[in-house]
Figure 1 (cartoon, rainbow, N blue to C red):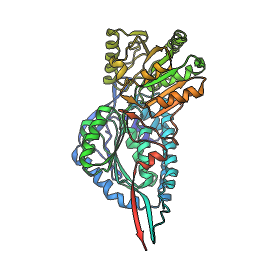
Figure 2: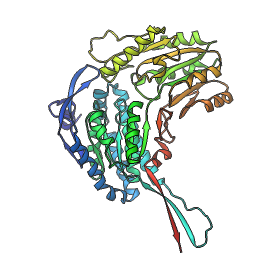
Figure 3: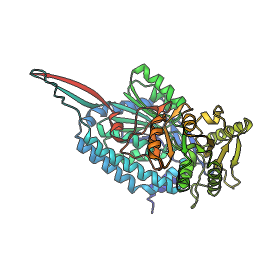
Figure 4: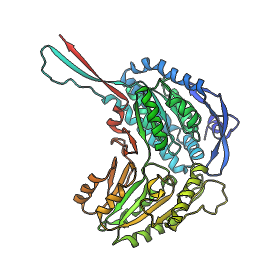
Length: 488
């Protein structure tokens, strides 16, 4: 059964969520309501940090940096492992918080908690494997050491769609190598982040090493991104905000990691056993109501199999159950907020005006809840120049188009500003690898779809971002190289 504290956090809207700085919660600033996407109703409140609290959080992170970076790497790993255990033990409460603030179904929210814990465990171990070099250069009575040092204070700005696992991708590698961090969660999803910070303290993390400032992007987010203290800003969100962060970081000549979304294509060749892959394609299109960066949003199908594929895909989407995230058996929950819902409606309506056809969906469902719902939608007849073909959709809408050959498919797949991920389905693996080489993306799945592995780097090309997360390449992003010349 949930503890009294868990019940209070879930049900007591009179106690606002505050910032978590130097090991304690601080409620200061304008109080705003948090809206449950499943109902459209307020269920909790949060405080919006101002300049004073952002300064305090960053100063605390800077003051704790020397002690944390000098902590033995094995001890840092022990604390991270303890933190991962706390996350797993707290899955029920964290899952319900994510369900309420993000609109994610309870099974999906629980899976996110488990994913975050696994990432923390992974980087606890990967932090022990960060190495320098001692090249055998052969200079007389001289040695050269190439070492990696923690970059310093990190500012992490995270989105609403995966509030916990996205944070873990940033927090865990930063802490593992000896950095300290200030997180700014999306204003709509602060509860799980603040609770994660509490659990980190319980796991033995020293106060000040991991701080949280709550509030809006233009408010606390901008204050964090424009502050001179952070030596690295890591951001997941829209490319427009990412470009602002890149510009402001230029003032301080500091590192950035930007994961700016995608408009990810799937290519189905005429020889592909597509019926075997159809459930995975449906899931990758509609998971989390289409609100994640590497979802399939465009499908290019060989014209020989196009009609059969389209009919089966439309039928599969029509069978998905849309409803409140708390209901059992729901396949597609709500969008995160009303602005996203209105944007999706506008994109689809504009596409239809320009000649696109709605094969299924294209509207909100008729259900009693006042939440932010949109039916799984398939569009055909979409031309490459339409806004919906160029802008990230970030909702349960998929474009399906016929192609004459793989040459056309790859050309169309590359025809957006984004370059995050792509999917290829073909029996001819030699050709699939050849076409994978020509896709302008950071990750390609061939004949399978699964979650991006934590052991492999993840990130985008073109306007999908800079840098990589996960894997040893991701942890190295939080370090700086230093060369030491020793003569004797």
